Length: 205
Ligand SMILES: C[C@@]1(CC(=O)O)C2=NC(=C\c3[nH]c(c(CCC(=O)O)c3CC(=O)O)Cc3[nH]c(c(CC(=O)O)c3CCC(=O)O)/C=C3\N/C(=C\2)[C@@H](CCC(=O)O)[C@]3(C)CC(=O)O)/[C@H]1CCC(=O)O
Ligand SMILES: NC(=O)c1ccc[n+]([C@@H]2O[C@H](COP(=O)([O-])OP(=O)(O)OC[C@H]3O[C@@H](n4cnc5c(N)ncnc54)[C@H](O)[C@@H]3O)[C@@H](O)[C@H]2O)c1
Image (cartoon, rainbow, N blue to C red; front, side, top):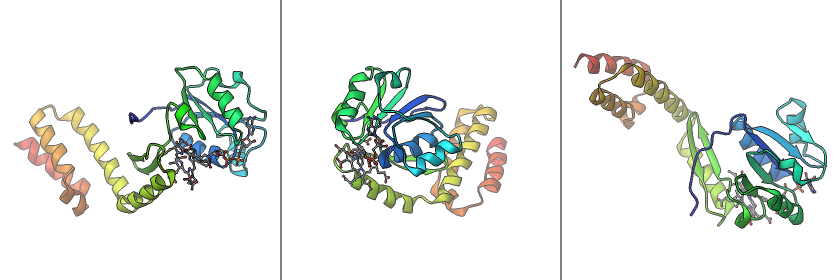
């Protein structure tokens, strides 16, 4: 059973071997997390070419060699050649995070399907059973959690930071956190005004 985590990979070095359709999909997810990406491949998709042109990542136009992954925090082997992907697996150090797109058994992590709504992240994994089902569940959840929900989550984040800084009474904090996380509060939609009012009331108590 996999152990789910949220990795902070901002400014971390990621090397993607291969520049096809699957590599492009992984690159989009990595860019959202602000990774520093190097792609190693003799040819890349037009989508990746555009990202190279605007300086979002570095392309080394070559076939894989073991020195390409030295110092990488994450290594993704995404070529269409099983032998090359295996060579990448053999070159990786045990402490590197390794995803081989055609060999889940030799990978030490898989990439889940993801819904992002503001600070909310929902990751879906079927543990290699069916990426297509993971995609279906993602689409289903995208319908349940809309952009407004994301704005609500971001609002909660701002409130939480403010409360942690300014409200030192633990009972009051708990009451505030609980109230703004209530479904009825979210649905009424006057988040800012209600929060101001709530603060006044709770602080007076
Ligand atoms: C979720 C998602 C994330 C992402 O890639 O970003 C993802 N695959 C997605 C799509 C997708 N992948 C495939 C198809 C074609 C239909 C089909 O075959 O079913 C489609 C659908 C499509 O392309 O539309 C084929 C496929 N995938 C893997 C193998 C090899 C194998 O299983 O051995 C093969 C056969 C290759 C071959 O032909 O040989 C392996 C993996 N794919 C994973 C993740 C990991 C397990 C996640 C899990 O189990 O939940 C894992 C283990 C490793 C990894 O890649 O991390 C993304 C959906 C994103 C979204 O839409 O939200
Ligand atoms: N994990 C997944 O989500 C998933 C989904 C579909 C397919 N797959 C698997 O992923 C593989 C890649 O699929 P694709 O559609 O992206 O393939 P693709 O044909 O679009 O791209 C292959 C890429 O690999 C590069 N490449 C080939 N030899 C190389 C080498 N020696 N060094 C560096 N780069 C090299 C090519 O230049 C090209 O950029 C498929 O073989 C399939 O088994 C995985």
